[in-house]
Image (tube, rainbow, N blue to C red):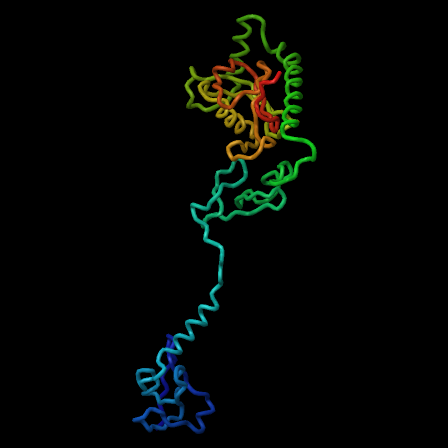
Length: 303
């Protein structure tokens, strides 16, 4: 009577069929109380013994090395798993995309960060390409400054040029749009109000209307100038943030860094840089002009 052959099991087993060459000779089951001759015996992967179908399992022949095959299999699977020394990104390790107008958090499970080798910053997938974050216009992080020129010297030099430029702007621009009579000033302010843009949630009685420009020699913007209204109770720092968004000027003031990347507000009528903590209603008037500049150094009280 030919021996019955069981179908291949779906789960790993502790035994395997012997080589097909055994069909010609077969073998006797090595279990002590069994002398059955099997033409297709099984080999126990733990003790390497030869057994018939009835005693092929570890429990069936009371294997002295039970479990060894399972331990070897677990070690093999563990060695195939990829080892990773890097920690999975979490909300605690997440950072914000370096693009000034992007609020996406990167280095998370849902959004990876891509490092730019040119400017040494990390961006989200949307702004990973150098053209998308205007890489050529950004000072690389860690770039060396010119030898022999201190930050204070650069600030004084830039501020001197700024004051001279402000005086020229006052002489060339202000006399023309600034009417000499009260009636004409009202007409000019009403025209500014008709073209100005701003947050509609700001009450009309709390609005201050300003001409805003971005100085081309120190910064770049999508719109060089515009007319806007702001809340006159705002600080100069908050007004600057809103003005930068309006002209689409890169603003990294809230992310730290040096003065070479910091935006400042120059008041043309006042001829000076404004402090971030000053209130708009205390230093500005309706219809004034402010200019956004970058890298001019901190506010100085020197003449």
